[in-house]
Length: 210
Image 1 (tube, rainbow, N blue to C red):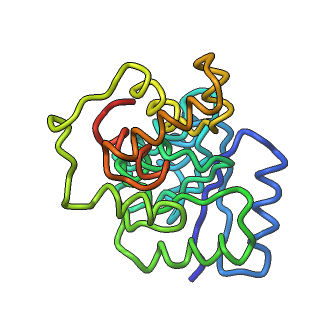
Image 2: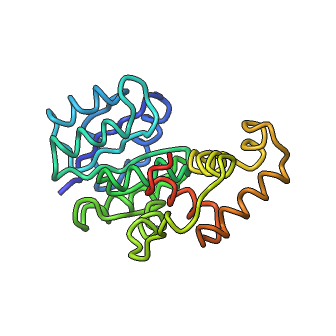
Image 3: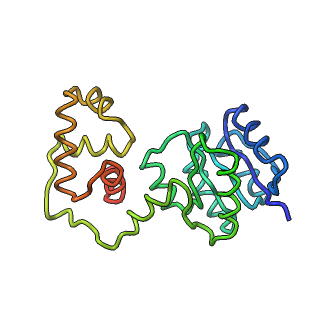
């Protein structure tokens, strides 16, 4: 039996490209949408097995649409599509019940495999880019934020990390030197006990710093 998929992306080229990915596969595209609002309407009408949902769109972004689709159709798998590895997006998608988070640079084989595995797993099982993030969020050893305090600059740096900015972009945004950014990140690693920026960014999301 074919897996029914609804493609949601505001770029026509992206939608057409995804359709060609599924030629000759057990995946059948049953509809398209160009916004979060349209995605919810069509998902309710078409009742797809899987919704491939762009993260950033007009008229209701993908994360809002994810929440609405999961509420209206709890049995439907939603896999987020994005050009960004932003930990904030991934962590929020995980929290809202997405079954996966796939980069738009993925191969045809990777995308088809993600969809098939999502159908074989319980709804909201974590796939793709979400797996590492989910492991951090589900870690039972929580950091006690009462044990340390962050300076205003460290908090600001942490927020920028969570939004996916590079060190140079953070330096520009905060009007400080590249070396100073590295110093702030080093302090964040020391205080949180996390050895890399991705884990710090996810921790920031979990602790509602962003």
